[in-house]
Image (cartoon, rainbow, N blue to C red; front, side):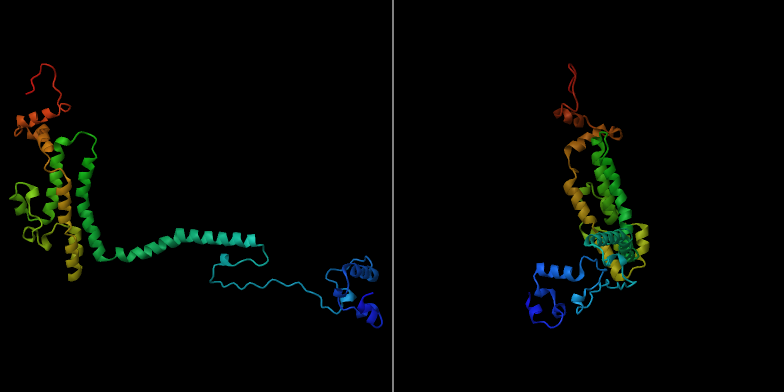
Amino acid sequence: MPEACETGHGNGFAAIHSEAHFSDDQFEQLILQKYGKKKLKPNAVPKLFSHRPAVKPRKPPRLRIDPRENRTSVNSAGLPDSCNVSRAESGSSSNEKLSADGGSSELSEARHEPDLTNDVNKAYCAFLLSVIPEFEKTNTFLQSGAPQVHVLLEVLNSLLREILLWFVKPSVIKSSCELTDIDYKSSGNQRDDDDLVIGSQTLQILERLKIADKQQFLTRVRFFVVVSDYIILKFPLKSEILKKAEVARLSSIVTAKFADVRYFNRFPVLLPVSEGQDDD
């Protein structure tokens, strides 16, 4: 018999303090002897452990949701972790979708709206709209599928002439035999700021700018010098083949020379000669 029963007074069960005084087999026998196989009510406490308070189930803590916060970010109480994770993922995905659809567009609009209402930026946009069409016209021609080698030199020179007219004095261009020989970098040969060809809409916007902003704009748009340098360096404006190929132009029949035609004898593939036909 356990020590608690030997030293206890009165009923041996009254002296029992806890199940820790018994082994597993003795504890089970005492319970069956005292209560039998009678089923206990839920949450019922046997008299053997009457000195212990009944353990009440804890209620989940009440959620305190701030209406200003996003409810999808609050974890559900009492749900498995998988549910919380899935809900968190769905909340994050909905937030990302919101930011991607509405939030990002509003943010981008708010970010770019001041720039679009700025007169300085409006002036740059108007300037680009006035000069880009000239480059597009040449680019479209260069993408032609038909043979255009006989007019290629004229088109390239026309682009260079148009650009020079934007910032070089017309008298300087007229007095020069070759466009590539013009000293367009000299400030004496360039137009004044008020005479630059930058588009009528750009000029209207410049009238609303401050003097400092206007001067800075006119200094930056003088990229014509860099463009002219690139064209003269990269374009075949001095190609002898392109010059001789102009003999095929109908407009040059009056000034064409047979020497230009004989020049292409070095390219038999271009001008094949039949048997018995004179090379001249």
